[in-house]
Amino acid sequence: MVVLKTSRELAAMRDAGRISARALKLAGEAVEPGVSTWEIDRIVRRYIEGQGAVPTFLGYGGFPASACISVNNVVIHGIPRKDQKLRAGDIVSVDVGATYEGFVGDNAWTFPCGDVSSEAKALMDATRESLFEGIWAAQAGNRIGDIGSAVQRYVEARGYSVVRDFVGHGVGAKMHEDPSVPNYGTPGRGVRLLPGMTIAIEPMINAGGHTVRTLPDGWTVVTTDGKLSAHFEHSIAITKDGPVILTLPD
Image 1 (cartoon, one colour):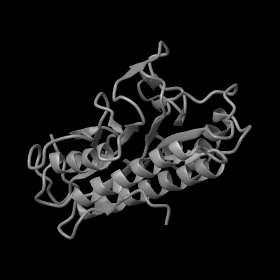
Image 2 (image 1 turned 90 degrees about the vertical axis):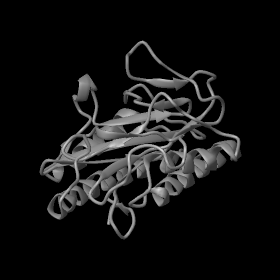
Image 3 (image 1 turned 45 degrees about the horizontal axis):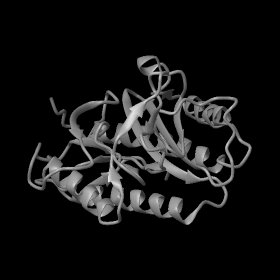
């Protein structure tokens, strides 16, 4: 069931989104060669809890950290580790959620670690831009398929693949609400977008094929062919005046 948010609830979601976005920004600033993914997770948790919020991911389904940190061919759900030190040339996807006053802000970004290859930069650029293509398609009266189609058309035109096994989602009092928001689809199909809906749009785009697999830890999702993957995400609200990004640091 899709839950439409009131203006008061949207204001609370903007507060949660701001905390999550600032935590993500701090995580990105910490991405440097020699830094462990565990250290970045500690920075995220310290900031979120310092704001009186709760790290949404911590303990969610048994997840052991406050951020998902996914490096290179890891698509999503990378578990931070003390022994995983970043190296120059890595691309590092950080996914952060913060729960504040009963609402969730959920966002992700892929950061370069030092100088990265032209291939990695092109993938990150295309994935980031596809996110904004999807957001622009999230107009009241459009349908979920319009969002996925916008993302899919943009990245496939550049030779990349859309992950099918994992999708975006509604967000609000829970991190995962209806509706599902695939990054592929057919224009004019799916749930109609109404003012008050809040969704997380999160393209997960691979440099190679679209297939992925989950490692034995039950969380870490990697590309089947070992090629790079990038991940960008914003939580947004559908309004009569157009989509509004809720996960902005300022």
